[in-house]
Image (cartoon, rainbow over all chains, first blue to last red; front, top):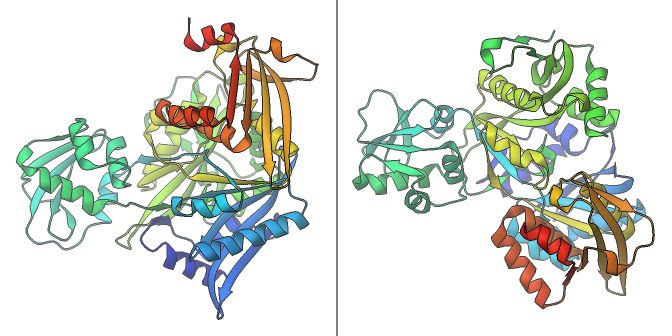
Length: 236
Length: 279
């Protein structure tokens, strides 16, 4: 079963920044088999898995709570069916309330319709520890373009060629210009939380030559990861 | 065996040292977590988060801060692989269970533990660090000092089946939050409405703030004596609290329409207003 679940998650969230989920991680972080009371509900159509929800029954501040580790659904209708299954089970288990944290704003209407209270309560915070390794993992063969030196406060500069279709971390090339910023601005741009132009106008990004503005902007659009998918089960 | 991290690897004070947990110290670690978080969780929770976690070894992942040989705090790093859109993977870590022994707070053990976790991760070739604090707790304010940026606010959805229990849960969480000391001695009355298709239930609580913390009162107090009376639908209340911690603009955008639609009602004394405005 875990193979089908992992396949479905990878298919639905294929474009998202996400943690690699192995069957071992699934067994410990999501179903917690042999440790706590766990549930797994699924929705299938024509024998094909379309959605699942993994949740644990936990005691929280003297209340019986369903802690939803993850809900993956192909569409709103599947999500609605999964929520109905969770609520039906919660009544049997005499649960006081159900907690679910999600990364997709697009499904908020489904939760509203089902009577959930929705509010932001947690924040995903990220620290940049090795920009060279991060950008090297995005490197690909590139021809032409311009070369920039990226200086992020607190780290050694990284030289990058920005081609028409991708970027490449290079070592022996003379840069055409340099780009400086801080790690917070870099991360917010990398994860699509702000725009290059906004940060440039706020002077959180400095260019050695303003004529290279479009190349700098293209660099950030090429490395950008707009969607971040880290369900509750991965929050350890 | 636990490994000692050398003085040159961290900005430590002369009396502090940092090491990783040794095999055989698992129970002591579980006990100090429960003492520090009051409570942290059950032995089963600990087993799942620590011993059963794939690729986890207490002597590699758990950092201990000592002061003059005494265990004063620590933190844990969980290592994972993450997928980028290029389909290549990078190594990341999740920082968690940062704690300071109640007898040693305010001396910098938290900072030492957090810096040591980042250094441990960098030594292991980690690219990004992750943390997931609640927006109303101190770590969300403290973590930027250690390079963490607020990147994403996931949405929490709650289905309430037992309003009394949920109300008590909210109060227990509020008791752990910090309130500005200018509100010390003030009385607050909270009237929360839980609406269901066939029923509306109101639950009331009365509280006093002392030394920056919330205390629930049991005695009968009149509305007239409270410095702040808030009446709200539970959903509105949760949105308002979140907006308060997110930013002023979010607070204004959520509170004013709610006041106009009477989903939120607020009455306050002159004393409260003066304290709120800092007069």
